[in-house]
Length: 354
Ligand SMILES: *Cc1c(COP(=O)(O)O)cnc(C)c1O
Figure 1 (cartoon, helix red, strand yellow):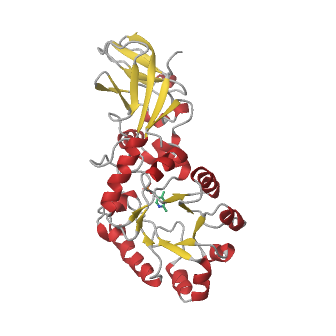
Figure 2 (tube, protein in one colour):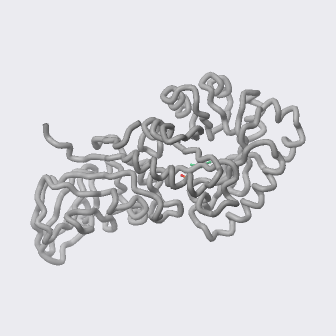
Figure 3 (cartoon, helix red, strand yellow):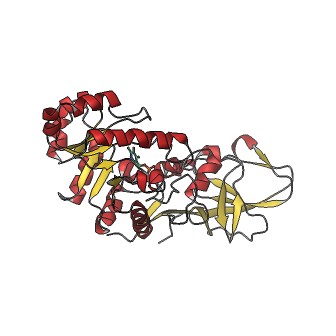
């Protein structure tokens, strides 16, 4: 059997390590993993199964269908919240799969009826959630409140990736007001970033996503968070290039000296952004090497001058030497997008499956 030309390794032991690190940071608050978008592209079901074995009891997804699939895989015990809430027509399907919506508006509250739900109150992000005025009106209607069966009141930080941003303290103050309106419900404010803002931001439950998957909580590598994903691809061909020659579509890179190029079996169809042209790096034979020219759908060119490169050798494109936060910076995006763009073409290997 020939070895695969490209392999995505997802280290669930590292996910478990990151879960423990986030739990330690969150103190007595419950740590409830966010596994939306198929676990940030890494596989919601294997991730959630392993985290269940690590003691997670509550999960968050974005879409109803994600929740339905997760319920089927995990069985009846964990609590599963759906961030989308209860759009028109969703109430019966939510109840049938024993999913709890995160209700985002008075319309959704009316559409849901009863059965247990979280409430999302906007504290400044202006994305989902009731306005503060609507929350005040709801709090003054105990009959409606008890019909919903409120199990959590939450909000979301707009600047969780930027510890010094004044928006964080402003949202914290507003959320404390919100909590006062619903004193009997557990409260939740923080995603990965906010978990590292100290105990004031922890409340009763935290909702980490990206840092479970190896992204730093503040868009940079963090000492307590381990990389989860490794993407390796094989060198298909090594070629010598002469001064003045160019490489790739658009002939965007011109060699200023003799050199050697490795052509690697990965490309934008695997999820590597074309915008990393001229800025990205890969790791090979103990050193960081430049990506050269535009990457193609299936191929990436790497400067391996004087490295003694050979066809068949393996290059690391994401991993412990090419952290997702650094790959993101080189491409002008965020670690979240690096992960969720990884395609299913490469062979996937899970380490530490529960
Ligand atoms: C995606 C999301 C999270 C998780 O955020 P991370 O930055 O990935 O930790 C938490 N809460 C809400 C409402 C979200 O949409």
